[in-house]
Length: 166
Image 1: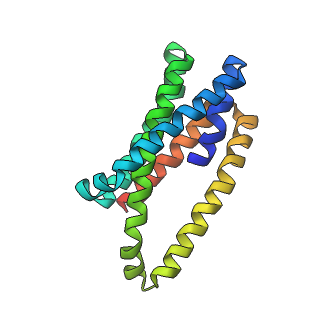
Image 2: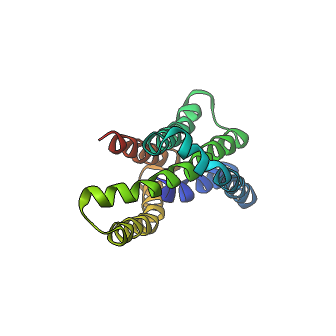
């Protein structure tokens, strides 16, 4: 979801405003909550739990991404609202990432795998997702348009929450 959103959201801004500066502003604005939330994500995971943090952060990311096409269809979407929703979505990412990282030792024990092996598989999948995600985002823009590509991104986040309940 994040890999696709990194392409789709700036493209949507560029499409709507025609301004590369506005697209850059959105990208810069989403970096700030990543930095700030990273300072508190470990404490939050410890406080509310690993699974709840992981599922909650993906659910909130799904909601913030889905809100973009919903608001666009209901009232129209201006740059400020789009940036605000993108910032809200980005704010949840560090907590979800931290929570998933802390689940790895338990996953290794349950699978009977070494922690090295589980971490290697996790990092390979993470890296693969970040290679595939932006390309998928670009294909979706070409296929269904930027605003509708966000539905696929939201479903990706939502699917992660379903996996967390399994």
